[in-house]
Amino acid sequence: MSRRPARAEQPRDTGDETPGNQVLTLPNLISFGRLLGVPLFLYLFLVARADVAAVVVLAIGGTTDWVDGWIARRLHQVSRLGELLDPLADRLYILATLVAFTVREVVPWQFTAALLAREVLLLASLAVLRRYGYGPPPVHYVGKTATFLLLAAFPVLLLASAATDVATAASAIGWALAWWGLVLYWVAGGMYVVQAARLVRAARGPGAAA
Image (cartoon, rainbow, N blue to C red; front, side, top):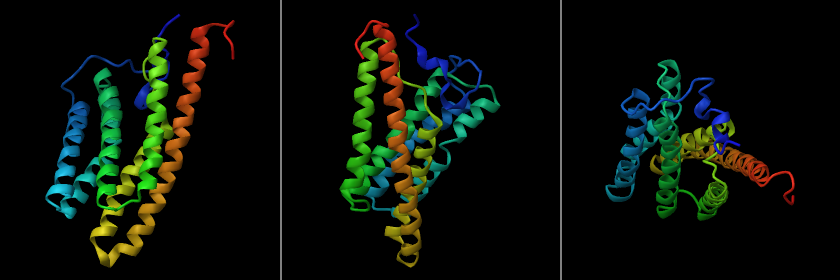
């Protein structure tokens, strides 16, 4: 029995296209650029206190969340490296932004704790999967939607704290996006856990205890 069932559903909505081994592709370069944006944002926000520039970096990182996958499909440049870089960039953006926002009290620690708890749950599930020889589960569209909402919410929340003239409207929009993103983030996490449980049961065989 194959120990790589995660490939049965293609991550990043790649359809039936088989991932290749390319490295220097346009989608991968975009993902690398997004990764470089994480330390740049942290520097601008926590060290330089250049909030406007930090908003721009966050906005670019959020709006390009879907771009690399779309270009990969359009140009037939879907790669295994890209399948790793895309969710890695998403997670680093979310975690870095949460830590920075919590330090400067843009978001309450309870919101940060709720998102981090979901990451801990997924890490535990991934550890169990690896124990049975499986790789990480494929990226689900619910998780991608949650990530998009969160990455859209963060620059709006930062704008609300930096620009007092639009603070009320920006705060309302930002928190609406953030709370919907949090809910969907946990829904996606639950789906990953259910998928992991099915794989573990399959690996144990039909005679294993439920």
